[in-house]
Image (cartoon, rainbow, N blue to C red; front, side, top):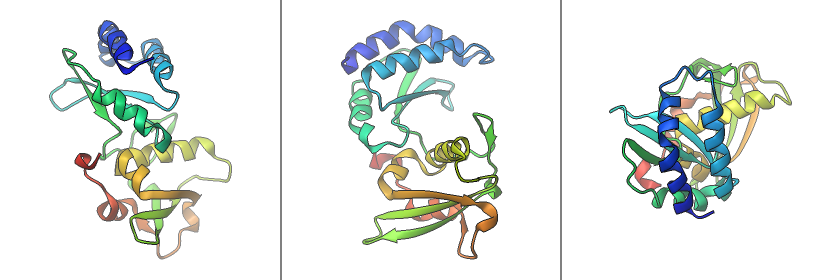
Length: 194
């Protein structure tokens, strides 16, 4: 599937997605159809739907933090045509995301501390996330933490500035561990860098 094929499908399906965005989300079928359609274009991409500050519908084109999907995400984003009431956004943007429920996992700021180590020239970092409730093999918590990280630091920043991410329980945090906002202040790349 080419990007234009996806956008033609999307333009024809947009009213269903608009109704879904305005719903109570009890029926996820419209999102699942969108997800499957996007997978026909690229296995690396994941859609997110939201509203912007002016209440316009937004399709976030995410590669779920996988660098391998960046080319597909960029090509799809660049091919976005004018679709009334919609805009496309490339990657998850940095925001205040605390308290959002992701598959039953909710983090508050105090639930996550970080320890980072610059890699060689300081352009990239290895990161240790200390997380409340984390235990070895806690895939659900790790997945939620990575989504939070994408939203708090910005997906592009995570892909470009973090080389390696490891997890540990919050109670194991050392004195060197810092709140996530201090990491964001040092490594965040602005959206225009994308």
